[in-house]
Length: 349
Ligand code: DAH
Image (cartoon, rainbow, N blue to C red; front, side, top):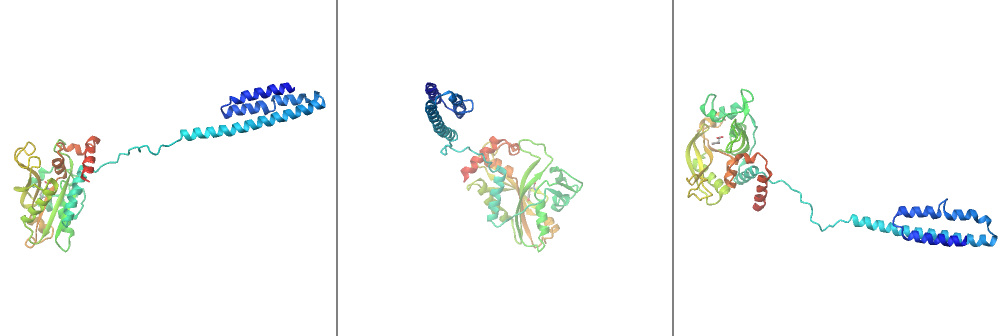
């Protein structure tokens, strides 16, 4: 039996030396210390031994058990340490790695142009006003000197909702709203950006929904030269210091006289190129002196007050400023197009 114990110890040492996992270690524990282990089997044969042999065998068996227990618990600590190290290695985070890039949106070119125009006019003491997109025929047309049946209504093919309401075809009705709301009839200096709608077929230069910025100044002694000075500052801010403007006679029912405003072509400096159709000039907006009928209808005495008004299309300004040839680009949300403005935005900063 003493011999058997020796062999068992050798077997155990051989086996434990190749243990690599907790599972294997548990198997060995059961095999050498469990109820059906060889040591248990030996103890059941002890009764057949002499007293001296019993003593010696008992001592050796205890020694073996303590030895097995110590080896197993040492190895358990070692394995646990190894497992922890493996886990830490696997879960290691390299804090020096570059972070995943999160794409943030940029400012839409139309919003950018509107913001720029707002900033300019705010710096000149203007207020920025808003108005409803669903507008009454009265404000959109009639009080702007466009009575029912007026031929100029046909140029603004409208989305009517009822007989008397429509999606506004222009931001000009905010002129009416502003003058009517100003009970004391004090001077007015406002710009009004917003969406406008017309029943146009979409193509490279038309969109059924687009933007306008209305400008209105009403006070005593406002003249055409005030309008010219203001629009000169505007053109230089949007297209560069070297730009000049010119007025061409035009017609709008709500202004008299009415003009269209051209700016010298930024591409060729006024020499003539394909962008300005070799004229050196590009049309940027419509304007004029507020028609006395409009002033009177809105409660301003046209003998005392005069005013100027203008209407700018941010799409047109953005197309000229950034060399965009198709208005539909603004509304189709192609990221390749919009990303270009991310870049312009950052360069501007
Ligand atoms: N509302 C005009 C349009 O849609 C643009 C315009 C022209 C506005 C002249 C004005 C103006 O205030 O004075 O065509």
